[in-house]
Length: 241
Ligand SMILES: NC(=O)c1ccc[n+]([C@@H]2O[C@H](COP(=O)([O-])OP(=O)(O)OC[C@H]3O[C@@H](n4cnc5c(N)ncnc54)[C@H](OP(=O)(O)O)[C@@H]3O)[C@@H](O)[C@H]2O)c1
Image (cartoon, rainbow, N blue to C red; front, side, top):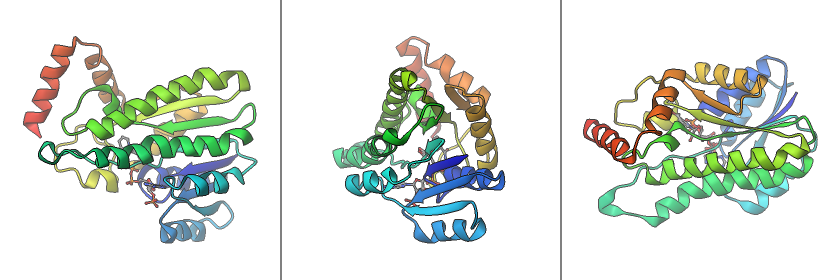
């Protein structure tokens, strides 16, 4: 398969890139970190091509990704996480997070969509943070709720073109992103586990790839409770953090 992966320079995207390369696929690995891209290329010269890409740069994103005309699978992993401080409420923080997680991801879709043929797959990485109102996660959780909704709408609208759109919602995964967290992260999994679960889900065309399973089930159940119960749960998480 020819695969295009954003966020390939670190964490989940990097592990997916390595695992798909090991399985013999050809990957266009995207990210801003040129050193990380060069290292991936050096490790798998016949299977990985690095593409320097900042998805907040609208013109460059569309120009550079439009050039890849033969892609079977696109996995949009690139994302950022910033937590809000109520004593320094900042709309700019929302702009930064949404510009990468939502608008940047859609810039990638805009770029690749004209070249996606029937039978190809578009995979978009969100988060289980979309399922409950977590403390200080107004921007991050909001962006992931938005991306999940958009992904589901795309499932409806790209079906006629034969493009499978799959939504990925990870729980806590050990990556540089979660290294910054100073709170307990229940049921945290390794990037290797995350990559394997995501690849299996993609193989099986699962519309909703949520993991780890127990964590996902718990949050999905919680998200169906009355809002006052959800607030009580979120309050407990806040006190524990
Ligand atoms: N780790 C978790 O527990 C967890 C849980 C749920 C969801 N997720 C989601 O999974 C995805 C990957 O997270 P991760 O934990 O692997 O994070 P990570 O290790 O921090 O990696 C983030 C990736 O996004 C790329 N990126 C960030 N801003 C970018 C930009 N402006 N343009 C292009 N690429 C950009 C980074 O590449 P460069 O710096 O090279 O640009 C990097 O490759 C994110 O969407 C995240 O929200 C993670």
